[in-house]
Amino acid sequence: MIITGKITLKKGKEVSIQRFHPWIFSGAIQKMEGEVVDGCWVEVNDFKGKTLGFGHYQNGSIAVRMLSFDQAAPTDTFWETKLRKALNVRHASGLPSEVTNAFRLTHAEGDGVPGLVIDYYDGVLIVQAHSAGMHNDRHEIAAALKLVLPGLTAVFYKSQGSLPGKVRDNKEEYLLGLGAVPHVVVENKYRFLIDWEEGQKTGFFLDQRENRKLLGDFSKGKNVLNTFCYTGGFSVYALHAGAKLVHSVDASQKAIDLTRKNIELNGFSPELHECFAIDTFDFMKDKQDLYDVIILDPPAFAKHRDARHQAVRGYQRLNAETMKVIRPGGILFTFSCSQVVDRQLFYDTIVSAAIQAGRQIKVLHHLSQPADHPVSIFHPEGEYLKGLVLYVE
Ligand code: SAH
Image (cartoon, rainbow, N blue to C red; front, side, top):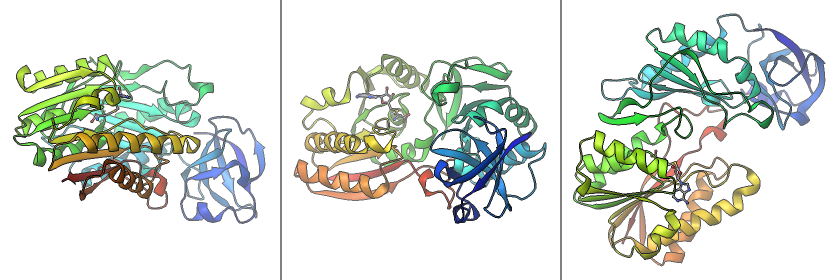
């Protein structure tokens, strides 16, 4: 890659970079030299002119996303090295395996590649850029993927929904090879259809893998309600674990169709499972004492800090309504994937919902994201998925 510009920080603003925090806010910048445009590579210096590292520039509140904290400029093997390191982290937790061939290969800041998310679906990689710099570098990244995963069959670029407005009009395309959708993967032995062309995000929510597995422990012989079900991931696990009946709810008809296909693909008869294309809040209204186990996995109610208050009210209402209707002795799996609602705030919101519902509640598990969604210890903002397993007396 070519480094086109240089950024010098204000005195004292080097400290967080020396501690490997990857973001430079626009207010920390003293001087910009050379060509500093959206998506370019820049060298970052401290106020004395000492090199702190290199990163992607983008005009905005986060002005630079650091990709290297070395003094030497990145070389041609930069992407290959980054991707190999990321793959090693997955290998360390046994991914991929005979029972699971779908996983997240890079999780942005958690893998030292802010702005880059790559999901692996049995030989097909879906690249999602969240910054102009990653968009510009997509072909180099695809070429490096080929070196790191020689068996891959396709690399699909899908960033329409994740890029900032200015660069968003770029179409979705295959960067390498071709893949046929839907594509079947296995997760903990269970089969799922992935449609990265039509589906939400990269086509599947890999971050719930461990939590779906845990749901199995609670599902045998139970009436299970899976709300915000998308591909029906939790529903498939509940059925495999021997649930008596499973109901899946999603506001999107496409999601419901996909859920139905996944239930079929796993060989379950339609008598055990029913789908409802409806808003969860409406569905929940007249469901008193019908379900023993309920999953609440809504989309991020807040994507930005200014929407946080509204989001907290949304979580509070959803959880309180659910706590009111669940059968005595019921189990509630409740989640938030809003980055701006941290673990403590989510917990406090659930306490407030419990008070409103007037039920006795015990916390059985604190849940999070799995090992293929790592969090850099220097970037705690990377922890986004929070969940609780609750026993409702
Ligand atoms: N639990 C899923 C992921 C959920 S993604 C999994 O394990 O894969 C969030 C889903 O919520 C999306 O499919 C979206 O269509 C759905 N959704 C959003 N708002 C909704 C609402 N008000 N009621 C029901 N579903 C909703």
